[in-house]
Image (tube, rainbow, N blue to C red):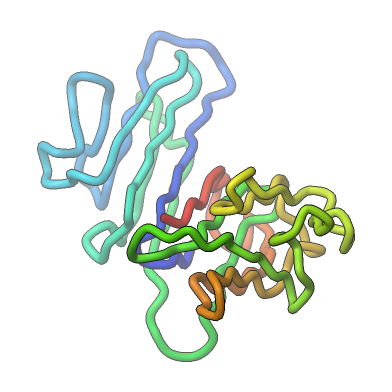
Length: 201
C-alpha cells in the first residue's frame, strides 16, 4: 500500500514485456478508468486523472492533486493479464508527517507560498543549508543525486535511496513554506510496480 500526502501528484506506470496489439486498460476499484480513447477517467467522475500510452507496451496514469475520492486500487491489464496493482491511500493528519518513497524513485518537492513573493527560497536538509547563496550546493553535504532549479522553487531527487532519508524544509524569509519528512522503502513492502514521480504542488 502506498501512503500519499493529500494534494500531491503521483504517476503510476504499467509495462508489458512483450509487443502486442492489445492496449493497456486501467481499472479503479473494478471500474474501467482509462483505455485510450475508448474509456476516459472523466466518464466516471475523475477530473484529476489522466492516462497516456507511450507505445504498445507502456502506459502511464497520472493523478493530480490527489483527494480522498482517489483512494483505492488501481490495476493495469493487457488483455486478460493483470500487470500491476497500486493500492493508494492518503496520509491522515496526526503524528509525524512521514512520506514513504519507493527506493529508486524520482521525486520533486516545491517551496509553497500562497502569493507572489520576491524572497529567495532557502532549502535545508536535516538542518544543513543546501541553497540560498551561490556558495551552497546539495553536493557539498554529500547529496550527489539532488539538484535545485535555478529559481530554487523546486528540489529534485533522482533515484531516491537511504542517504536521502530525512527532513527537507524550505524557508521564505523567516517563514517555513514547506516541510517534508521522507523515508525510503522497498517496492515489495509498498506496492507492486514503481511510483515514478511524486510531485508536490
